[in-house]
Amino acid sequence: MFLKSHFGTIITAILALVMGFIMAIAVILVDQLGLTWTVLFKLWAEIFFIVFVVSLFIPYNSWGDRFAQLLGLKPGTLSFKLVQAIIPSAILNTFNTLICSGQSIFYNAEIPQSIRMQTWINGWTHDWLIFFIISYLASFVAVWVGTKTATVILGKPASRSI
Image 1 (spheres, one colour):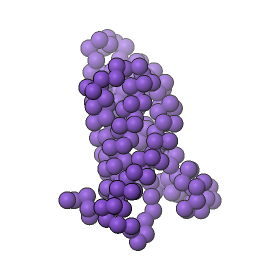
Image 2 (tube, rainbow, N blue to C red; image 1 turned 60 degrees about the horizontal axis):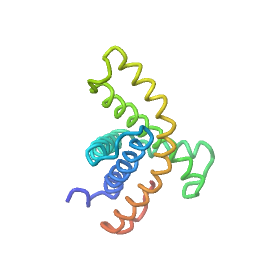
Image 3 (cartoon, one colour; image 1 turned 45 degrees about the horizontal axis):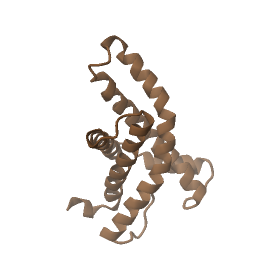
Image 4 (tube, helix red, strand yellow; image 1 turned 180 degrees about the horizontal axis):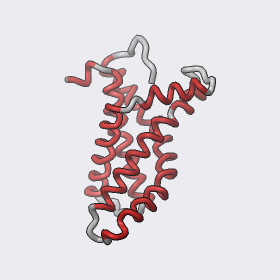
């Protein structure tokens, strides 16, 4: 299994699964969508895919580390972890909010084409801060679950920075 070769890949996969589920529930509740299996699964799959793909190409964790270090925080401390998580949450939330809201607006025949762009901008600006806070808090749960899972599969790594 390819995931067993890399501790961080397991964390990323679990992060995407857990964040996808938490954020899908949040989107359904905040945007007052019907809580059905179809809506939940569609959003969960969409968010999972976005988080996983963005995680492959953007080194947001190292950017978060540098941001916390710029503020003079020591790695491993609670304050470092709290500040470090801001950058990854902001990046992942921005991609999720832009893509998920765009997909649900631009491919919705019930929204007249002439107002789709403004509807998308309004939806994005309304939802971004709400979902940033939710994703920021959920990221701690998702990383914890991912780390525990990776440790069970691979054992405790000699050294790593998350």
